[in-house]
Image (tube, rainbow, N blue to C red; front, side, top):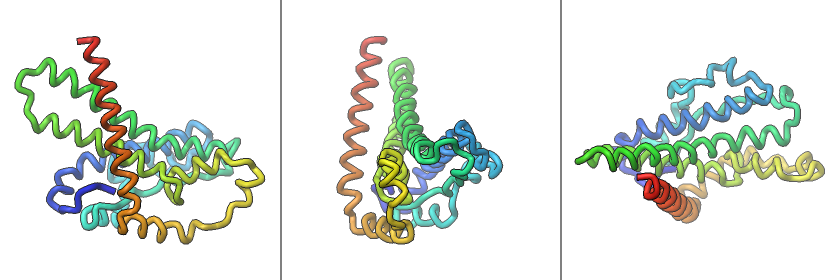
Length: 213
């Protein structure tokens, strides 16, 4: 989900979105591979090539409505030693990678702004936009509603007696999620959290370079 529905603005943000999605999905696949499942590697998903990760309908929804998704990385739980915990780790890898990318964008931006006199404002906008989009993507995916990553992370923390008796709500979850998005309910939580984390990361990075520079 992005906070502008203007097609012109979304097209300007599209490269950053594609890269953020690619990092997110690659991280899922890489963690699955580390934990013993080679499905993502077999499917060609251990790649930064956006074409490997983009879902055409999800991309169209981004352009039209400001809300969309990438192609999910397939995981075979039968290849995992501890499916419940490993699926949680695979799921959390995506959001963590986005938060790391947001931090990295600031780590690059601050020295640029300090050492490059007259740094074009467009460069600053690119890095700040990439930071914001990654934070937003990380926060959005941590919402505990299937099929988002947060639901699998929460499930991995549940006792086995609860985990293996969870009701099959997956077939209704996408409808619930779409309703929450288009009524603005998710935005009421997502945008303030994104801005809060963005502010904290910015101040933290500024503090680091305030000491080093």
